[in-house]
Image 1 (cartoon, rainbow, N blue to C red):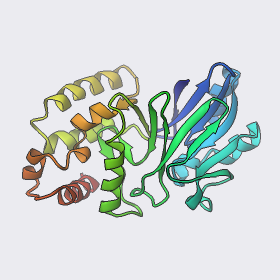
Image 2 (image 1 turned 180 degrees about the vertical axis):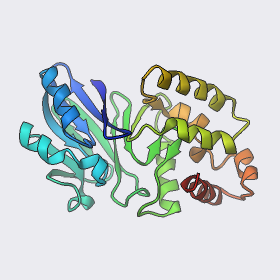
Image 3 (image 1 turned 120 degrees about the horizontal axis):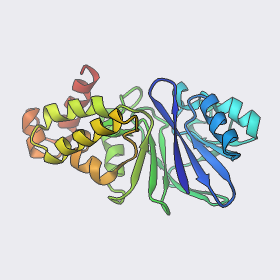
Image 4 (image 1 turned 135 degrees about the vertical axis):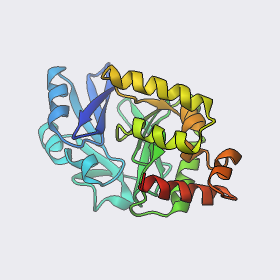
Length: 251
């Protein structure tokens, strides 16, 4: 499988998962249809599935047009079926979705929204996290609680270290400024910031990241760290995470 990053809207990423053996593809979170159609038609690839992590407009905006043009099937979370346009296949938490050569395990990871899921293509060790886990960040709490989001992030922390993480937005540089403010002794983070700036200056995406990099550098995955807790005058993980999320909302 090959993953192509498709830039959409202002700072969104959609992803084409391409099976080169059959020249067919899934698209993850199509914010809009035009750039996806342009890539598919240019490379003569057949779109067969549309995978949605959650219902926000900047992740499902291209669903209807892509479904109509390619007769692709829309795949999403069963509990969110009334909020995913054109949904055909409803998946549940922990379900393994297997179609053609595409095989992924579904994890329900609420917090950003109540119906948020991620798609883990475990054979390839690639993970599509939508707006739950970003490179050096996590999503805002539009519907869920601090406890739900922290629980969801703790699930993602258990994935293999080499897992490649593909998230919904290019927020990495801004996220890095927040992380370094409250985790100023983090050597790996300082090194990662240099790499981030170089990639962006070269016109490249900072995605994918890896679970290993996020465990080392993403302050939202480090709420158990004593240095981070002391910086925030916190006594435990949930208190630390809650303070971090509130501070980031106003950063």
